[in-house]
Amino acid sequence: MSHFIIHGNKRLVGEIAVRGAKNHAVKMIPASLLCKDPVTFTNVPRVEDVARVRELLDTTGYRAEDKSADSIRITSATRVDVHELPAALASRIRSSLLFVGPLLARTGQVKFPYPGGCVIGKRPIDLFVDCWRAMGAMVRENSAGFDIKAKQLRGAEYTFRFISHTATEGMIMTAVLAKGRTVLRNAAIEPEVVALAEFLKACGASIDGAGTHTITIQGTGGKLLRGGTAAIIPDRLEAGSFAILAALIGNDVRITNCEPKHLEVLLAHLNAAGASIEEGKDWISVTRAAKLLPVSVRTHEYPGFATDYQAPFTVLLTQAYGQSMVFEQIFEGRLTYLEDLNRMGADITQCDLHRAIVFGPSKLHGRDLESPDLRAGIAFVIAALIARGTSHIGNVYQIDRGYEKLDERLRGIGADIKRG
Image (tube, rainbow, N blue to C red; front, top):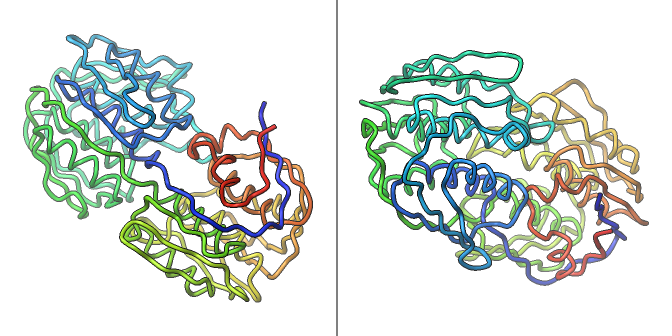
């Protein structure tokens, strides 16, 4: 299994481009099942999660063909009669859930395993199940997963108990071909949700309110949408990771092909920590602070401080002069990486499943580490890049799930990193 070999404590300078958003691409590909005509997506990232979703799409009879280095064309099947998502694929990635709504609307029955992904990805799917039931589906759970049937999905009014962007996107796709009106309340407002809705509207769907907490969908009653073309939006989480890294060891690192508006809260935190930041229409430039200041963070749904920034930002806090509090409000179990940071020399006290106190600055030293999940994995890469000595980061498949050719791109701005 491949790993990263990193020699740390090197200053970074230059330009690094952001790829398309993984969390957008993996929603748009299953959305193509709602269309009768071909669709084309540009700015598609070549990451492992997208590869797995494309493999799942192939099992439905639809076909995704590469048109260029970053674009794909998906050709619709004349008939979809698949009733089961293959466990070998679906159990590896949480985004497999997003195939269920379109397939249920197309075929009336879907069997699928418990969705997988990384440690953070193994989360309950009760929001999905409740909403499918509200729309008339019969859901049965067994040891292998779920069996869902619905002769005709019908519109419903549904209030999410808590905000979830994946559940919001999944229910939008389920409701598009349903009969009647669906109203989703307490819906997520992430840029990826808005971009998905805009694409579906361009293909003929009736969706109002995307970008607010109440979304209304007037279903087609089973009539498929037209095809279309859309660009995958820039990955705000990748851009944020690069910005955090630059705030630690960067000298005018320019992060291009990004959307600064999607990063406003993170940039506010970096400013508070003392980093120097300039913004353009589609770029930001970040220079490390002469002295990093402590900043407490509290994760929140968009537009708040994203949970996916939490692990990389905690690495930054290990270098701040003073005490910071990290409060992870979204997920339990997302602080398990702290023990490894402490092994590198950090001084972090975990208070409970959601809170930790970071004391800084600490001198980090290279270690051998294993990536437990995507965002902790990139945090380990950042920690290794600022540490003294050599680190080996294993299980880089987790990092490859969301970062395209990370080692090559980081070498372009001066990082000493290679894949072994």
